Length: 256
Image (cartoon, rainbow, N blue to C red):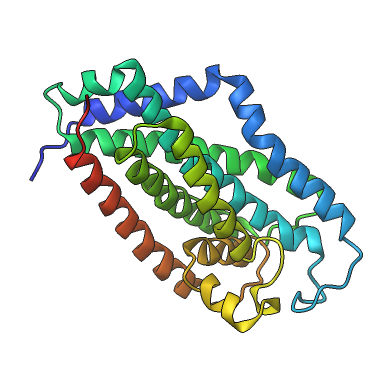
């Protein structure tokens, strides 16, 4: 089994943190769309009666966990783009020839991407609370952090898996856009999946984000389509599978 290098993991994690705080335009650009989704859709449909939403839950409270899930999805998935930048500028070659296991590199990059994604999700939570989201309690908030970490790890690992097999940044962006928008729309982030036709609903059940958004909604608002234990179990399995896939593809990838 490859040896885990804690210092290498910490160094790669710290590098992602520094990049996150230095690139303020990137942070603003990644947070602006979720904020506008939350503001315009939340206030625009606040008084509308939407089937399958409990009467004691307004649309903003229903929508906010979905927008947090959207933020985690987009931020985590496009984290693979930074690996392609490192490939272009030679940094990836330098760390891969270093006496450090590739597993340590994967863990360090994933930890950095997950941390920045969760931070962005928490930032989006603030305007949600201001707009009227009522969190069920401290226990619910702490459980939502678990769901955020699982969502971010799942899609960060998928982004890493795709980036490991690609060398073209524009192609990566196109493929990610092709993948993330259906995942987002099928997840029930904007509306209950029970409102979808049966054939589309069956696709929603295959979407890991569906269980992440439902878990966030259940932990933060107290309303969910599935039991929270079920959401947690399914998401944990998807997370482990995606992490294993990302680590394997990165392990066998080559750097020119």
